[in-house]
Figure: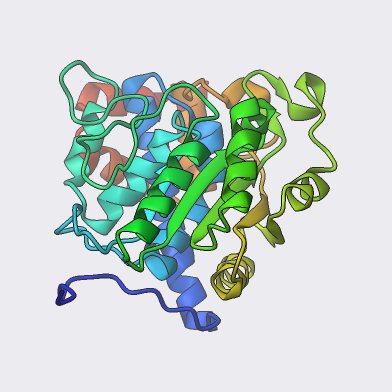
Amino acid sequence: MKVPTTVSSPDMSLLDQYERQLLRRVAREVRRDILLTTFAASSGHPGGSLSETEILVSLYSKILRHDPKRPDWADRDRFILSKGHATPGLYATLANKGYFSRSELQGFRKINSLLQGHSKIGIPGVEMSAGSLGQGLSFGVGVALACRLDKRSYRTYVLLGDGECDEGQVWEAAMSASHYKVDTLTAIIDRNRIQNDRFVSQVMEIEPLAAKWKGFGWNVVRAQGHSFLSLQRAFLRAQQIKGRPTVIIANTTKGKGVSFMEDNPDFHGKPPNAQQFLQAMEEIGYKGRKMLDEMRKFGFSEQVMNHVWDTRTV
């Protein structure tokens, strides 16, 4: 099959300074849209979306073989969001790459809109309908085995939350992937150390996490989840491993980029209010009139914009 000319092909060379600057710019745009989306909806999960940002930007900018104009292309690499509530980050990334219009973000979590709170099949670029945690890795194992049976060459990537590793189904899938030597499968753990309203260690201590994955027969790579260079190295290492799957444990910060959201369980599933939104946008680099321009382009009414602007004096 001829590869479409619009395909994004993986570039596994190490990143130079210029490339890292471009990726950081995209990450800032994704963070902007996470904040705009959750504030507009008064709903959603900003914390885990902000922690996964560099992982998603790395995948869709440098790692995945994919074609936004043909999301059903048979030889595309597959990305599965197992932590399926962190859709503001995924949707912002997909819109940034051209899978659908950025204007769709305005309808997030609204009845009859394209973009619902959890990822679902039917949205361009989404491979699995999510909701209950712990299912994505099993789905990914099946997708990777189908690739083998169909004699295709695509790779499969699954992003899990660290709290999601409480689920027994994750470890059943891990055992299965190792048993079948699914070396085209890479799992990434967003190790932000918070799940729902508490820290992971308070709910269920999952350390020693790396040793557990090694015990299940996986190749384990550690990465700094907000460093594009570290992530690139990790993905390159995963592609070099033969005969077993790889898990990348990416150390991240929940709510990364917004001071009052960082390491704060309160913002797992709570959007910012007007004053918080103003502060958050300023902290990621959209200050004053620049922030208002972004709100206007996103589709906010003048009334809402004035309300946000007025919170400066509160």
